[in-house]
Amino acid sequence: MAVMYQQIAGDLRRKIEGGDMPPGSRLPTEIELMEKYAASRNTVRDAIKVLTNRGLVETRPGQGTYVLKSREPFVSILTGDPHATKGEGPVQYEQVRAGGGVPTVSGTRVEIQILTGIKAEALRVDEGSQVVSRHQQRFIDGTPWSLQTSFYPMRLVAEQNASRLIQATDITEGVMAYLANDLGIKQVGYRDSVAVRAPEEAEAAFFEIPSDGRVSVFEIFRVAFDENGDRLRLTVTVLPADRNRLQINVGQVP
Amino acid sequence: MAVMYQQIAGDLRRKIEGGDMPPGSRLPTEIELMEKYAASRNTVRDAIKVLTNRGLVETRPGQGTYVLKSREPFVSILTGDPHATKGEGPVQYEQVRAGGGVPTVSGTRVEIQILTGIKAEALRVDEGSQVVSRHQQRFIDGTPWSLQTSFYPMRLVAEQNASRLIQATDITEGVMAYLANDLGIKQVGYRDSVAVRAPEEAEAAFFEIPSDGRVSVFEIFRVAFDENGDRLRLTVTVLPADRNRLQINVGQVP
DNA sequence: GGGTATTTGTCCGTATGTATT
DNA sequence: AAATACATACGGACAAATACC
Image 1 (tube, rainbow over the protein chains, first blue to last red):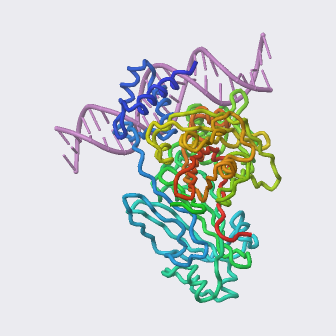
Image 2: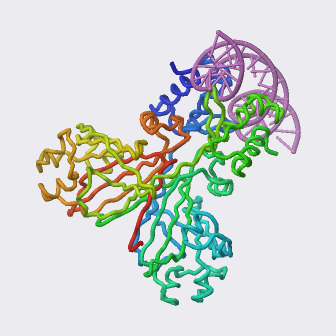
Image 3: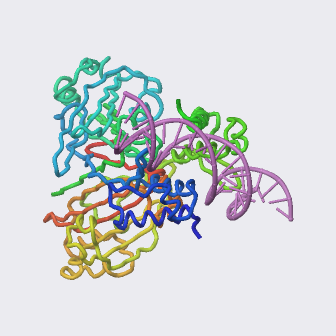
């Protein structure tokens, strides 16, 4: 019923998932598989393509095809004290892997940008408005973990004198702490919206994942609200979906 | 620099994303693309494969290759009152699309199952323990939305007489309400863990998505806790990532 | 460093099958 | 039934990456 390349793919898949070919092991070469299944090389390659698309194997030119090892995922916590002001910049995510792991952050890149589309809509500013953008790269134990960009409406700088926002220096006590302590602007809640999409070129390069969309990324929009229900900032966080899990705690959890 | 099929893919992609080929429109046939780019049919097909893998187009045998339309995503809310007892069964997700949309639920399939692996670990029962499994299919406006299975430790039935759990009838007032009102067992919090993976065969068939892993699914593990910090149930929800967004509200949000 | 063997990647041409109109 | 369009499968040739001597 199934055609030949699917049969070959199914057979290899069973051998991988059944433990006959453990993670890290090398598959037979395409030539060997041709002989084993009495198929042409292109047919064998079609079968292997099924496995790579499902994230089971990886082909390395000049070396062979290898069974992928599943790595221990990072855990990012999306819930926290909405009034919290501590933390290093617009930190949203905590890393709770059992083995530990040290998060590090790149220097903050600060820009004035034009905000359009759904981002402008999320921050409730006019299409094409100027905003302050603060961008960071985040790593855990040296491996790329997340890309994070926060957008602040210009009124915070223009009308409420949040001048440190537009300086290209880290705000070590945290932006929310700065706004609360120096300006009396307090975050009382936030809303996250989580989607999954294919990575952009730059994201694939940073995370060291294939740029063809086989591995997708989480895209998290976090909108923060102040006491008046006004939107304080929009933070967009991107993390590769193959090495991250999101955790949400509600109520009383041990 | 880039090889030919990548150049063709890039050219087509720019035309799609630039609006030259709007969603729903048909691409030139493979023969026409062969002539246009002076490439062989296999090379043209390789280029199209890049686009299908990125979720930009869809090929239909006998018809042609079409630019996909992005559908309005469903929004599922992961946060709610941890003490809430109302609701139809193990409901976790609310649908908040602007245009409305009527959620419907299949009848509940109840089974006694053996729980193993990470599911047993999540519910903190011994590997290979028997549990009660209650499974539902959920739709919105008739389109498949989510698959949901809840697992309850057998002690609820054996020691605490939650006999209705093992009856194959819907518990219309909600399982949590039943446990609270009849047995005095109260949920005080829960923890969600969100991952993304390729769909299984049955899931792809139910959601009507390709079974080759191009479209991935959210897999949400929800563990519910009672006042003693014991685990009341594990609910596993699967929903296709191409038509769903997850929303998390923390603190005071308008 | 250089050369060679191995292995996967790209590209071509052709033939036939299957789904749709 | 016929035409159209994509899917599968074969064969071959050369390129590019890697490993090894």
